[in-house]
Length: 190
Image (tube, rainbow, N blue to C red):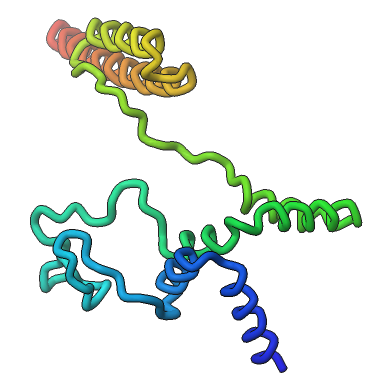
């Protein structure tokens, strides 16, 4: 009976999804679907593993590996399946929460509206070697915010990095000064 139920659910899922989405989800879940083509040559991919790797399993020269910002196949599959159902799931979660099941609401909302994660900020900071360079970097951050290239929150995070760098520089310089003073004191005693 469980196999029949699972088969009915799978069939209902495929019937409700658009054809392109069905193929993508099927490929991601390993359920078949039309073969994918290699983007570079247009040839059919023979294997999804091992391409661009050395015999030792390391990436071949010139192959940086997984592209930045790419997502795991399972994550992509789940997001593709939930994509069209978000409104219904939210409605059901709210109904369950109103009926006293707060866990259902919390879990669904966490999945549908996840907390934002950090993303790389497109900002070219000037090279810093002295504290004066940090002041120049801060000025370029302010200019980027004024030009609309950075949001104030992005600028705040970058400025925090520069502040941390300045503290590390200050600590290093103080340690060097203390070492010189201790050497002078020991020479005067000796």
